[in-house]
Image 1 (tube, rainbow, N blue to C red):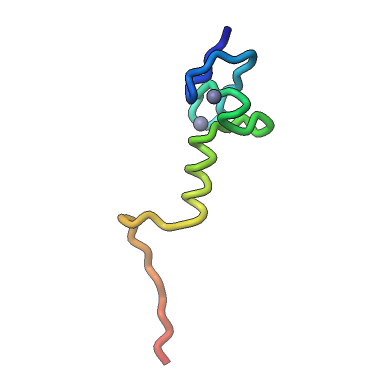
Image 2: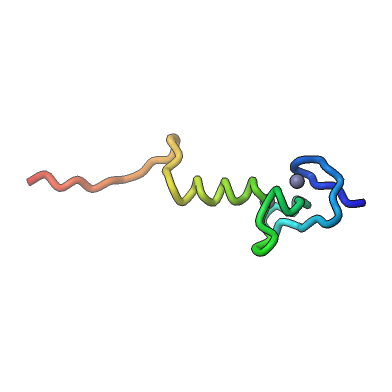
Length: 63
Ligand SMILES: [Zn+2]
Ligand SMILES: [Zn+2]
């Protein structure tokens, strides 16, 4: 029986994440997109906010 690499439970079916290759169960990711929970979180974080150690140039209009 395949095992989910995220929750470590034995499940009927696992899906392989196209981002990191992790095999995950249907509860640990989006099987429709073949992306595991970790990669969904990463994608959301990357889109939603800047990393603190990342230098971001911001132009400020000083009128
Ligand atoms: Zn799982
Ligand atoms: Zn992944």
